[in-house]
Image (cartoon, rainbow, N blue to C red; front, side, top):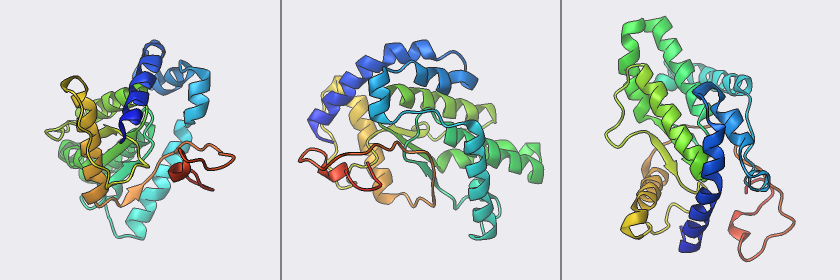
Length: 228
């Protein structure tokens, strides 16, 4: 991630966070209120829009069915071999949908006593990337709370939700920043390791979509017919 990109992230964070915090009241209302608190132009440019929970749950059920019936993963998202990534996490609604669905299956099929152990395994296999600082902070909080509420022991480095640019090359050199900015460089380095070495089976989410009239020298690597 080039240094101008880091400066853009910091500027974005300063611009968003005070508005975003005012939008956060309770976990059930976090995403809708948080998004309504964004700067309107920034929200449009970033493609940051609310995804209805009903849509998320439908997608999660469909993918879970494929995992069980087509890929021979009997526990679906909770199967130890299933690694899930949301490349545009936002405030974490898709990851929360996976947690809810997967652990509900465990409770039904194996009993309530099995939930905590399976939640610990699920925590190791869930990943999320988010570019904007405000939604990232909320997603990390919501995902960690959802897992802990179900008895999970989180990985020693916390949830695998990272502040990063999903479309950045995995071969990018890790950032070298000042001590004050070290948390950003740490997030960047962890995300690069995920891109390079984690065998993701499921990639789901609702990534932002924005049309570009034409590629320029600055956005050429990020401009295409279907990817931003």
